[in-house]
Image 1 (spheres, rainbow, N blue to C red):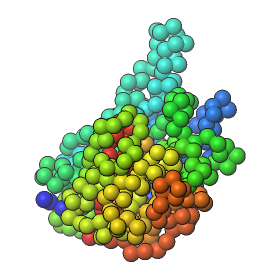
Image 2 (cartoon, helix red, strand yellow; image 1 turned 90 degrees about the vertical axis):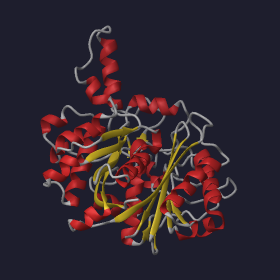
Image 3 (cartoon, rainbow, N blue to C red; image 1 turned 120 degrees about the horizontal axis):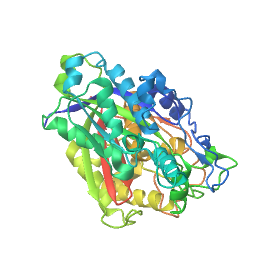
Image 4 (cartoon, helix red, strand yellow; image 1 turned 90 degrees about the horizontal axis):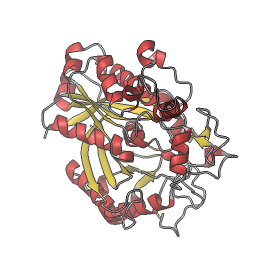
Length: 413
């Protein structure tokens, strides 16, 4: 198989509007969660989220084009520009012409859905904004990246709920391995912080709600006081490139995308299988694909949503996949700082793995004040403060509604 490496990074997150800002916040254990400003949260039980802050689309794209995009698309185009700038491909028209986009999007333009349905009822079912469909459908982020940068290769959108970003990178990996492309942009994008989303996830009893007086403490994976996940948003784009192609042009290589695994629980619409067997199999498949043993993995970035079912179930998955090596594994959930970015979760956490390798640093799980050992969370989750450690191999996994499981392995080159 052809080797695939990462040669460019771009990110818009609740912790900053660049890779450097985001990583600096992570290393310092900063939370991106605060009282909601995208809309008035007063009528809602849940009053906080991990919002992108201070984002101006005009800094990254044509203002006229931006006005025809939903937020998730604006974030994706901005992250793509950063990644292409970082890879030094932004002006290589021939390379871009042959490149494509594999993007994970769980839901799409939810704020457009909400506002357009409002117009639909207010006008007695007669009118909606003319750009409703082109803005809300999930594929529009990848399509706009293609249009903005002249990418004429395959442009695919992956929708596997919270595993979307992970699966998009995995699909792009396989596509380059088999020779269809030398360069692909891969990652995820999402923006669903609006009232309709709030109430929709609240009725599922999925969201944290009891930390309105101190939102920064709301996302607390593996802690006894966790009460649900916190909604996040943003976009993360990786430039994936065939290894020899990257070497031939003198590209900076961050890491190798070494392995990918995917399974389906076949169990429940919203809950993971509590026995952890199928999720653990996903991890095992990723390690087998990468040609590594569990003992060689230095860092695992957890899905770690801060829900009771996920955190205990994911720990069982790790015990299943790693055996005795799980006890020595560095684990953390950066969702404690970024919230849960849905379709962007896996791509943002892939970025965390790459930066961990680059910097030999294990990010913390903040707010882990009283570890829920009795509830099944019995591993080393790097509580509250990151640690310096040699990281040659890092792994992340994500699990979506419907039982979608995806796992990626990254290696130092």
